[in-house]
Amino acid sequence: MVYQIKELANGIRIVHQEVNSTRLVHCGFILDIGSRDENKEQEGLAHFWEHMAFKGTKKRKAFHIINRLDSVGGELNAYTTKEKICFYATVLRQHWTKAAELLCDITFNSTFPARQIDKERQVILEEMAMYRDAPDDAIQDEFDKLLFPNHSLGYNILGTENTVGQFSQKDFLNFVGQHLDSSRIVCSVVGNISFQKAIRTLEPLLSSIPPTKSFAKRQPVNGYEPSTGIQYKEISQTHCALGKPALSIFDERRFKLYLLNNILGGPSMNSRLNMALREKHGLAYSIESVYQAFTDTGFIGIYYGTEEKAAAKARKIVLREIQKIREKKLGTMQLHMGKEQTIGQMAMAEENYSGLMLVYGKSLLDKGKIESLEEIFKKIRSCTAEELQDLANEVYDVDQFSFLTYLPKPI
Image (tube, rainbow, N blue to C red; front, top):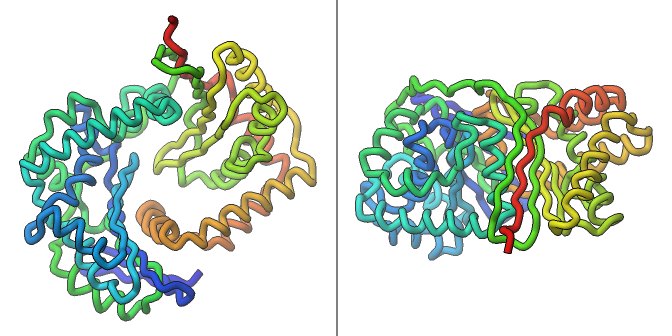
């Protein structure tokens, strides 16, 4: 991994890695602003801003934004998380300058036209309805409220029908003005373009952006108490979520937890939860365990769906697997296989250059540096069975778990 970083006078940083084995260039702006920066009345505003960036700037209308890269076979996209907003694009290298200029324009020059707000409002309401119709997605959003009650980390990124229905142009301009901080913006570039060429294109575009400073402070997480929730839905399966807050990105044990989570219920079919619940008992089509780290906290969550009559048995099996990983130390071969599997997954992820571009930007914002895969691999390989068992006993304490269940409505 060979990357270079340049910081401009206004505080915006550019991180770049040249990859000669591709015809493409991936470029994105990663902003250290997310849904956790909203107050209750603003719930969903960051995500709505992400949508509105495509709806008009000082020199472009929505059609011109959408058509600019589509017409040359490129892709323009964006997403919002709890702590970040990202605008990014992928193009053939000969169209790099078009992508760079367009991304600068939508990131810094959005005008939030009132007519487009009304139109996009309905689009987002349809997006909400789509998620409500997908209980495996909806339960994950709803579960956040149990893990982070009365805190913006528990807000739904999409917002609520009430908040989304009230946002005006002034709300967007105020939110951007309050939170945009040029020192908390990274432009990340990965692809078949030299560092010198990337800087020659980006520096004139970005240097004209005035330095901005945000004095908004993120609210610390205000405590946690385990809780249980049951909701009745128009569904045919029982959907379950369980978990608790966990380690932040600054906790040195996070890679141990990443490894532990991967062994327990990661994406591979041989994870313990998948083997027990699906392969051995046939009680679920899919089950996943996730570990999500934020700047000051994090969480572990386990999600699955099963028949209502099998729900009690499925939960018993899941809790039994959690207890096993706490009580029984991993054997030498189990630990070795877990490490190699996790390292292999990370190595494959690095081959996704668009994803790598976004990881660079996020890492630079969160930690001020980019950890090489070799450093991460070294940390994973150094994990001992004793360390993982100690961590499992701390993090997977079921007595501290919250539980959320979606049940089919009685007929």
